[in-house]
Each structure stands twice: as C-alpha cells, then as structure tokens.
Length: 304
Image (cartoon, rainbow, N blue to C red; front, side, top):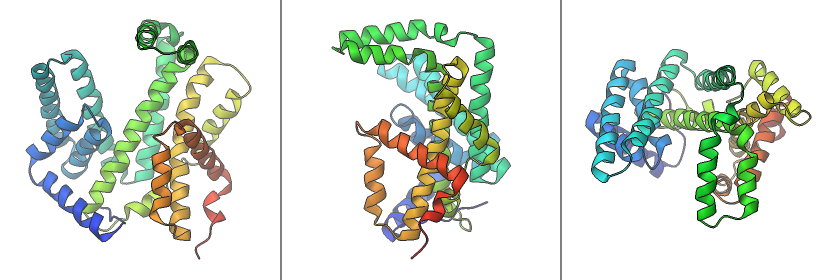
C-alpha cells in the first residue's frame, strides 16, 4: 500500500527527507513522539500510526510502549504530573497503533475514516448505557474548571457558556477524540505518501465522504437536534458535525484542484480555523460537507 503526495517541489523534497530520516532509525521516531506528545498530540499519534502502517501492529505497539515510558520519564524529571502524563501518553500513542491497524486492515483512507466514526459513535452509546446521566459524572470536572476560570478573571457570561455545555460534554469529548484520530490518520497518510509511491494522497482525500450508510443517521441526528432537546441526540450532534467537517474540507480541496485556486486561499481558510472565528468556519465547513453527502457539491465547480 502506498501514497503519492501532491504539492510544490520544495515542500516535497523537505518532507521526503524528514520522513526518510524519521523512519530510518526507530529511536528517531520514538524521540519525536515523546517530544510532540505534550505539545502536538495529533503529530505524535500520526508518527505511531505511520510506524504501525509501515512495520505492523507488533512493531507499532513496541514503539508506542517505549514512547509512553519516555513521556513518563520526561514528566518525572520535569516535575509534571506523572499520572496525567501517563494518561496523555496512553491516549495519544496507543490510539496511534489502533489507527495504523485500521489502515492496514482497510487499505483505504475512506474506510479507516468511517471506522473511526463508528468507534466514536459506539463510545458515546456505550457510555450512555454505563452512565444514564453522563453530565453528573462530569460535575466535579466542570466545577473545578469553572473555579479556575473564575480565579483567572473570566466573566459570568463566559462561565455560563461553559456550564451550558455540561449536558453535551460526553459528546464534545468523543468529537474531540474523533478529530484527534482523524487528524492523525490524514497526517500519517500524508507522510506515508513520501515514504511510498503509487497511491495519491490528494486523490484519496478529495474523494473522502461519510457515505450514505453513516450519512443518514448523522443527518437525522442534526435534524432532530434542531427540534428536540433529547440528551442522547444532543451528545451525538458534535460528532456528526465533526464528521461533516472533514467532508467539507474535502469538498474545498476538490474545488481548489478543479478551479486551480492559489494555495493561499486554502491557507487563509486553515488560519481562520485557529482564530475567534473558529466556530463559524467549522460550522460552515460542516454544512458544506452535509450538503455534499446528498447533492454532490463537488460538481458545482467543474475543471476549467
């Protein structure tokens, strides 16, 4: 299985050198994963995913275990919370092995993406069975966070917004996990494009879709959430929007390729996603993805 990357020649050469360097020696990849886990966990997950896709689940698990030990040692030496570091290491690095196994099993970006959707969906439903009132389980966490916000000078309006999210916190957590795993999947496959040839990453990403089977319940959840205030539905909405977010990005990349947009256009879009306009931009992208699942938004901009 292989991917061929798109992009400018300079970026291609730099990225190819980086990937070749990281994969040439196991210790390099492990050191990078340890360094990135506390600051850019998506990148750390992607490194372990890349290792698993390239060398198998056993070798990926071995690298993940060594990386977790490194994260714990780093936390101990620096005086950070060892328990928190351990949880972060397991959540970040073990999931990398899982995503890598999905890719090796599916041999497809789209199928691996859809499997991650199902994993998070079952996580929400399973948690709902274990905790009939999941918001109550998060009360201590919310209270602690509110106290921290209050001491840092947050306004009552800001605190009330946070408290208003409490019933949906379970869904927000799984939507965040979905973004982490899907982001790691895409980054790992992008890197893999430089290590192997024969399968275009760009082509795979531009055809990424949630599909009709998963699209129906996701669309239904969003529709019901706009009408009914049902706890389970409200907790499924963040995941549904996150799924369509990636499809919306896929549509925009398709338009960019078809109409030969300047790279700065997509660059500005990604920059807007880390500004105060984050929520608005992500909601617009999710809306584009939802529409594309049913009316083929990609066909609106034909190649010149």
